[in-house]
Image (cartoon, rainbow, N blue to C red):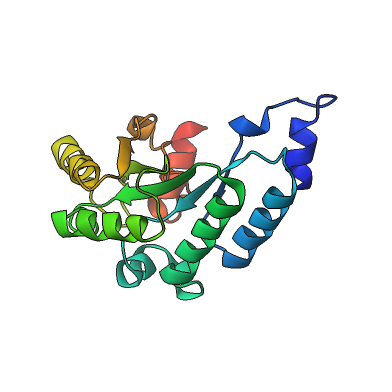
Length: 194
């Protein structure tokens, strides 16, 4: 909160709180803390984004180990609480992975999950992010057509969706691609760059 106070202060950067989004992987106590401060401070006005990435605990635990600590039901209840206290827009980040979380059934389950907390009609947004290839992960990026089909299915269930524009994957610099290379290939890369 101190950081938000500093960057939004007129004597500092003066960034409008309406233009600030706090992103979380789903740390439930922190969401409640933010809701408490946001509900008490009429000037809070910040949006909240959740890295969701799956419509159920089983799939989410595979993609996000933090889900072992905070079950999806608790995370979603905290997100609902945040919205109820602040009335600020919720965004749900959803990395689409071919064969993992991009089926028609996944879209239906995701829509049901979001509708269960009142996200339909509230201005909430699902930001679909086609996973960027990382050789070590084995995760496969869905086609543009598959992304569009998933988005359309969500919208048919009354959930707003968008597909994030990709930048930087051609140089392994896009979301999820930055990492330290190790091993023989890494040594060769470092020598070539020198």
